[in-house]
Structure formats: C-alpha cells, structure tokens
Figure 1 (cartoon, rainbow, N blue to C red):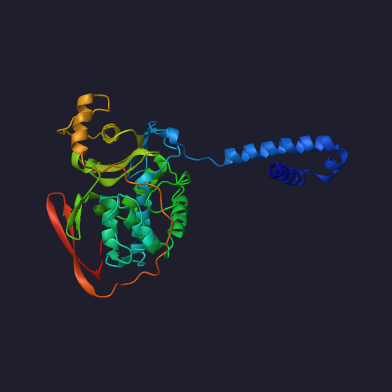
Figure 2: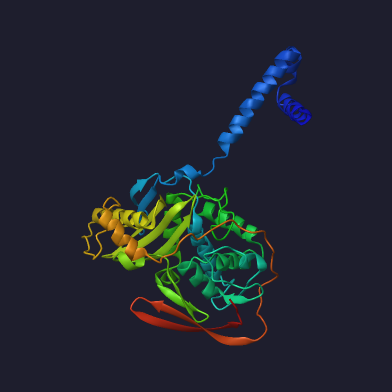
Length: 379
C-alpha cells in the first residue's frame, strides 16, 4: 500500500508540474488533486494507445498482399498493414543485410563466421553448430534459405553486428525504416519469439521487392532446393518451389503466435509477382492461399493460367488439402522457440588450419558444386 501511495504521489507531482503556476494557485487543493489524477489517467491511456503491439489473436486472421515486382503496384490485399509476428520471415532482412555487406565489400562469401555459445544455443530449426566452430558466409546464407537455421542466422547477425545480435537487430530496424517499412521492428536476427518484433504483409512485400531488384546476383540462393553441409543434405522448407509453376523462392516462417507465414515470388511470361501470406492455420492452407492469390494476380496482369498436377483450391476442399499435405510433408515443423541469454563471441577470424571445404548446392534439374577456401568449421 505504501508503495502504491508513493507512486501516486510521484505521479501527482509529475502531472502538477505540467499545470501553469497561475492555474495551480487559483485551484483548491482538492480540485488540484482531482485534476492531477484525471490527467494522470489520461496520460496512462495515451501511453497505452501510443505503443501498439502485435497480438496473438491475429492467428487465423489472414494478412496477405500481391505486388508486381517490377512496378510495385499492389494487385490484391487483405489486412496488409496489420502488425504481425514475422517468425522466420525475419531472416529475409538478415539476408538483405548480408547481401548489402557483400555488395559493399565488408564481407565475402568465403569469409569465416565464428559460432558463439549464444548462437549455438538457438533452438531448432538449426544446423547444429558448435560453439567455437566456424562456417562460411555462403553456408550461413544457404542455412537460412533452406533450413531456416536459427543458429546460422544468429551467427551471421553477430558477425554483421560486431559481435552483438542486439546491435544487429537495431541496424535491421533502421534499414527497415529506410526502405519505408513503417510497421516493422526487429529484436533479433532469426525470428525467435519476441513481443516487440513485428512486421506487416505490406512491409514484407516491400522488403522482398528490394531484395529482388537490388541484389539480383544473390537472388538465386532462394531457389536452391537443398545443399550439403558437412556430408548431409539439407532440404529447402519452401513447398512452393515444388508445387507452384514459376515459383523461385523466398521463405517460410512459423511460431504458435505468428501462425504459418510465407513469402513467395513467381515468374510467368516475364511478369514477376510477390505474394505474402501471414497467419495461416496450417501448411496446406498457407500454400493454397498463396497459390490462389498469385493465380489471381497473374490473371490481372493478363498472364494465362498454367496447368499444374495439383489442384490448389483456396483451402475449402478437403481433397485439395490432403494433396497439399502430401506435397508439403516433411517441409518442416515449428521453427522457433524462446531465445536463450546472450554470450558474445569475440571478433571474426579464421580457426587454426585451412582447408578446401566443399559446398554442394543441388539446384533444380542439376547439381552444382562450389569449392570455398576458409577456416575449418564444425557442426
């Protein structure tokens, strides 16, 4: 009770300081108290309203948008500015920042990325990186694109943030503002749950368009169906690469509070569209919704329908849902859980010894093989 009285007294003094001296002298003590408490209540209400947050009840309430990648024209939208939890779609900004750093010569594809205890502690989905080990920037990029690896995302974020993931998240948010992503705030590099980390369907479409137009030399990574990491094949979680004609990336995301999220880009007859679906209840529904809005977008652009073996209805037919479930089986389950406390690693460097470590990228219809020279890595 004493603590409560002290808080109220402090609040009355704070509010009273905002009242002109003349008004305080003319007002009686009781009137001043009532005025102070009334202003305090108004101040608190304004504070609550001024700090909106994403809310869990948005799960099942779909946000979506379809954008022409060339012109930026919006072809369809539903709740596009509703603030949502991005889940692993956060990694699109992590990748954007990595591409920008490579373009600027700050990092290279074959540069060693140190794995700190903090990054290794990230919950699945992950590559299983070991503290004190290394991977290359290219391996980290592929780990983010295919497996949505939280440990690789954190390690890459620490590299770009000077050893501090929180600093990197601040850089991500500043970059988002520079791109016009007004409803987006980042708190980590992976998309692991954080009440203050949020975005919108429109903002993600803006970011995706920027990735496609600004970094065409790196966009091909999003279409890699799988890659080999230390002798094991790591498949891509994105089902649209397999089931939607013309799709060539980008990213899936899931947490319980976010629902099932998806960003897809597809090309037909030299028309590229960007689709975003946030808050779906299941992977089949998410894929069906994405296929439907992209189909509608291509029709609006005068592009003829493309026959495909799977009948992707809009999530209303049980048979379509079953077929989609079969097509997306094994595409990954929950990708993020709570973040663990930070233990920062020191500067990036090369581990003792150097070796040629192969990075195999399995592309659609053929297998590619790139050899990168870098420090020894484990995991």
